[in-house]
Image 1: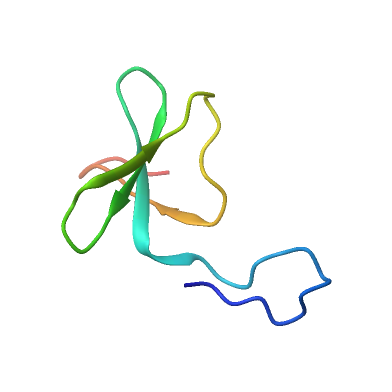
Image 2: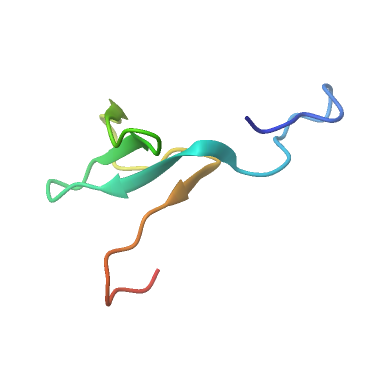
Length: 62
């Protein structure tokens, strides 16, 4: 997991480990567990999760 060095600072140091996110064809963002590939959560709004590494499809840049 990411660490919070100064608890009163209000931001995370580094990305959340063991998770990645990707955008579904419908435009929603889904969070995936890297250990077993299971989808953990899907956001209802079109904004990505904060602090989670984004997956890229082969041949596509960010």
